[in-house]
Image (tube, rainbow over all chains, first blue to last red; front, top):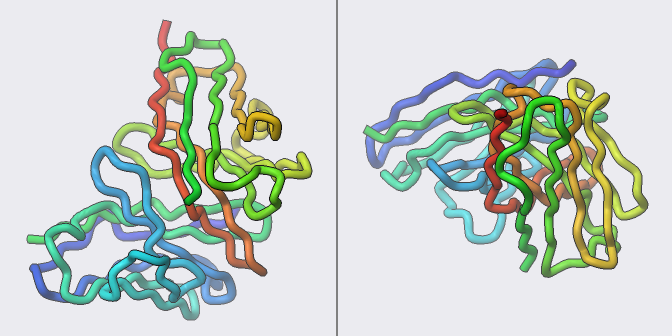
Length: 106
Length: 122
């Protein structure tokens, strides 16, 4: 079965750029998306189709996908961005999630 | 706007069947705009996709749960449902329903319900 691997945690200072990676075999040949989940809340889609932002998602959220790695980048990170982030892809027959990354804004 | 709301028992006994319903508003299940999906999340852990159903009635399940899962559709009520049989404590989780959008090979969960916690315990 297809697997997506994320670092368990990432820390960033307020105002700095946070990068969260998601690795999978030839992931660049697939489309990746990203969800943000704050404590006690449902996940929210923040990036789809590798690079696109849904309506209402701030411009500081961006995405890329190449080779074996997709990356979610948050520019000018704010305290409100502290959350768990999950990548997700379609492996041809099923939805696959990464294990999630806890972003801490120190 | 598309909204989803889960409902069902919060407590299920071991070996019994977990049954949840998702009520959708803002879009007709029959429109074919989305695949209708279930996802779960044990406390403190990550997301696990359970499966989806399309307006045509076609289904697709996570292989790890396939033998115990049934997802069905009631277009007259604009609802879809999840049944998970022979539950154990390992099935204790928050269960989410969501709309799954597909474009070419891009698949993503566009809208999520608020989630409903289910505990498996005697």
